[in-house]
Image (tube, rainbow, N blue to C red; front, top):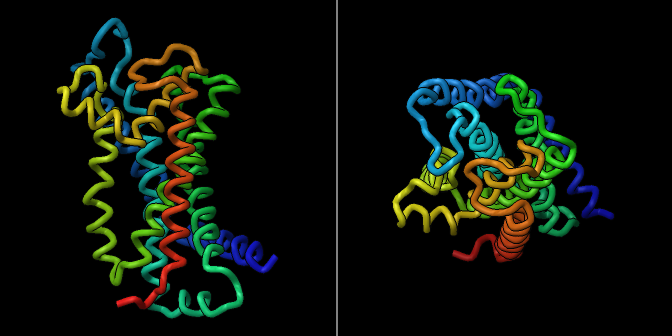
Length: 260
């Protein structure tokens, strides 16, 4: 019971911090939309899908990638508070409280997951502007993918932030692999037309299956352009990656904090 109280308290705290930060709110919604429009409109006359899936312009193709971008960055950077709260002393106060450390993982993971999923779903409201109306099954698939991806990357961010001393170091480590993961997910270019070595990297990248699942959801589980795997495979890989990342985060937080 004490652990659940801690989880819900930390989750509510993460959401409250986000809502009260107006600059963060503004950036969270305007930046991905601006990115989508600038790139989408800039490449729409030169972009061509490989194979027989002609007729898909770049604005439409890029949309699932923008949702994945929102999920990754919101989930990961929601955990930067771990670094800040160690400096302020809040983290130490929670650690000496009579509650298991795993509550820290689930509290922060749940907060970051809710924030990233809500932002991603709000961006879905732009779908009618490109003439796409997903059915109920498609929306449910997108929701499931958003929850699992948000959970995965919040847990990953927590694991890295747990040992970081400064927010500058956290940003440096995150940017080192976060953007490559997104670029190599089939979000910006179709994997069919990429070089063989890039195709291999796309296949082993868990973000690729999130993007693929979102693409399937956009078209109501019907035939979708640029997908890497079936809806079942996409959801299975996303679930497996989420369980793995939560496990790593729990293992990290249970280790002695001052081992050096």
